[in-house]
Image 1 (tube, rainbow, N blue to C red):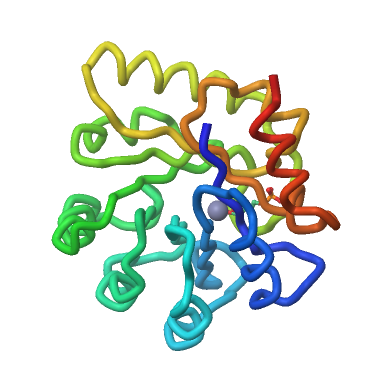
Image 2 (tube, helix red, strand yellow; image 1 turned 120 degrees about the vertical axis):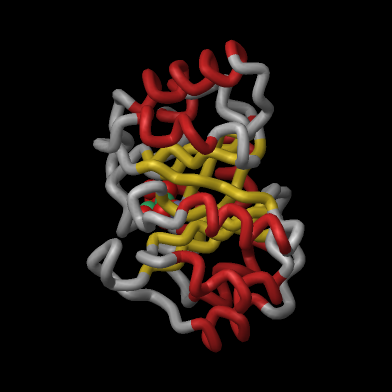
Length: 212
Ligand code: DX5
Ligand code: ZN
């Protein structure tokens, strides 16, 4: 399982947190961008995010919690991320947005909130590279893992197998050394406060990687 670290809630400022994550064996840097519309908080402007991440080393896993994600793609593509993920609830132009990300040769992710029917994803699963299952309501770090997320993971794994598809499955929210044991078949686990509020990022990442 790969580990993607979110710097959203940390003891330190964003810059210092990212520097610490860069020193670990984390697989991705998870970038949470919130517009104050799709979720209540706004936490970025495009110039700020380009500046913050211009010298990044880890592959970026960008999670857009914004309405109209398509309007951000040209700018975010400058960071050459591994994935750009947007929410199935955030736009009517899902296929157009997928195509726009794809045009830049960036992996396309679709994310789904805990109370949205998984059925909403089905038409797009053959078009994308990653599904991000939210295991908390998007908008803030440090929330508790929603236990029914495990059933959603099972259903998606089954659908992927039955339809011979190959998208990655990632989960985000409330993941720590205990809850990761509930989702051993994930491809990518996002973890934020469990790592970034600790004194030893690498030790926490090792706990996640060696959860069995
Ligand atoms: C929540 C964000 C998450 C969050 C995870 O809206 O998308 O990426 O930072 O943080 P933890 O691991 O603390 O739940
Ligand atoms: Zn996230």
